[in-house]
Length: 263
Image 1 (tube, rainbow, N blue to C red):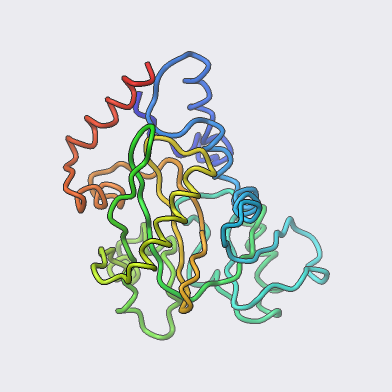
Image 2 (cartoon, rainbow, N blue to C red):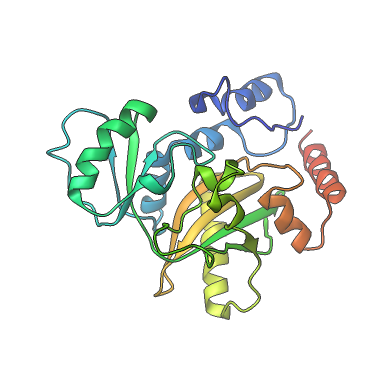
């Protein structure tokens, strides 16, 4: 069974349920188990796990609706994210804010559209997508970085919804991934360490992607763990595997071997 499910009826809360059904039926399936899928879907719960494990993650607060007058302080700039959505739904240029007034004005509208929200400190730095592949021991694939160099000053350097899905948007055509060859050895080692620790923390299996930002001081902040990254031939995980010398057929063969080992 290849589990390609990311939601059920567009409900992200149910993303882990198909895996749970497979587990109850005793059917081997690709990717992470139901618990890992559910833990990583909740951005707040994921951040609490990261902090408890000693991994850096941006400071944050939650908003569940109601008064915005008593919210705790958070370092600015910040970015508003739906707590449970995936695929950058609800995240775009207007999600980034710089003043407490912007925060108070935007939160009720975002909550009306997306429900529970996470407000997260915006880390200005390099963004890496780190894919891992292997069972029972994951291997770090070549690390992809997002190239924001074509962005004008009035665009925030984020991979939002338009960058991923709107083919008419500037961001869609100007956020290419590339595989840097000039990372200093200590920085690369730190990125790898953080990715592996996060992978194990969330109990990912077979494959996964850890998205991070590295600030100017070299600190690596985990943004999120993707327990079920897209397996489309043009997706980031497949690109990382190809960079490591593995074609699509070889990827599928590896998955079948993982399933055989668990059957």
